[in-house]
Amino acid sequence: MNGNIRVGNLFGIPFYVNPSWFFILGLVTLIYGGQLAQFPQIGGITPWILGLVAAILLFASVLAHELGHSFVAIAQGIEVKSISLFIFGGLASLEKESKTPAGSFYIAIAGPAVSLLLYAFFTALNASIALPTPADEIIFLLAQINLFLALFNLIPGLPLDGGNILKALVWQITGNPNKGVIFASRVGQFFGWLAVVIGLMGTLGISSVGSLWTAIIGWFLLQNAGFSAQSATIQDKLSNYTAEDAVIADSPIVAANLTLRELANDYIIGKEKWRKFLVTNGEGQLLGTISVEEMKKVPTSQWTETSVKDVTQPAATDTLVKSNISLLEVVKLIEKQEIKEFTVVREDGVVVGLLEKASIINLLQKEAKAKLA
Image (cartoon, rainbow, N blue to C red; front, top):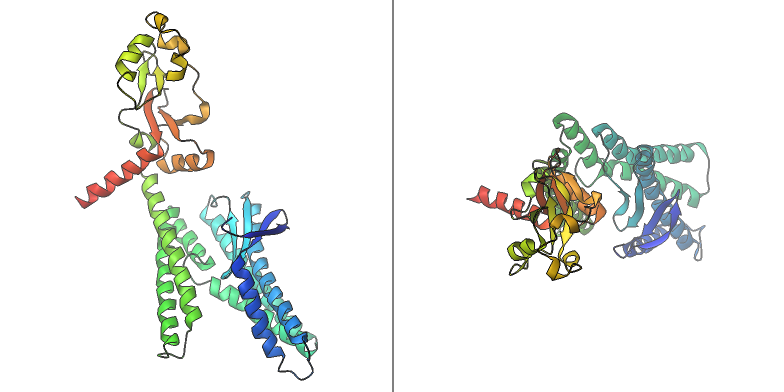
């Protein structure tokens, strides 16, 4: 899983850490351990042990943030495929998008809400109980970290939670989830560029605000927001077409009353493109399929007396799609079922033709060329 290391399950959710997480774990341990070493009452290796504890609690806060998203998703019947910790924080990978903009909003807001609750809890704990200096410092750090997690993630641009909240709002207004993703991605790219510029100015000494780390985070936002925008744009295009629009022009459709000899002479000999054909009755409705391999089981001496219908095999029902469903739904089926091609039929059972991934790509390419012409 992209080099991630599985470390177990949390509430039935697979939990992973990316190798980059160990770098941040060590960095936070060193930085915070160094700060604690300044207290005279803390000696030996104790500051570094406390620094490691603080680093682990920091990532526990990130994990709690992601669990907030996950529990709300599970409540909506959406499977959480995994939770991963990496150099920039955490990610809850969901099986699918919410069915409604309200559902999407609740999932997005849940993470920052958990972080704000943890901030309030640690702040209240720090104010109400007199703790020893190391514990006091760690509790204060956790409060600040959770406040930062909440506020940073509420920036209104993808891939941050604020971007998903913005996406849900645009979805609610337009009725189109892809338009929400595209808009929130563009806002995310704006904040990404802003962070890159601020970070570079700070690194070069032009500004007192920003650092190289700011620029790196900005680049991360840019990359992910750009990918989200591109993906949503393609999905928006696919939702405007139906399965019938992407059918292969010369799909292998043959009549059931042909003899095997006629099939061989007219569709197979000298033509190597198709090894399997869709068989239809007189009304053009699908009866099944016939393959070259099935034909070979019949002696060639009997081909003139044997009809295609006699050798036809039932079509697999999971490869049939209605002609009026959107191409976006077809693509999701291709990805989910890993089927290379589908047979497109109308409501009355009449065969339109075959559809495959390549024919969808060709349709999009033709549209792009037509716009350039």
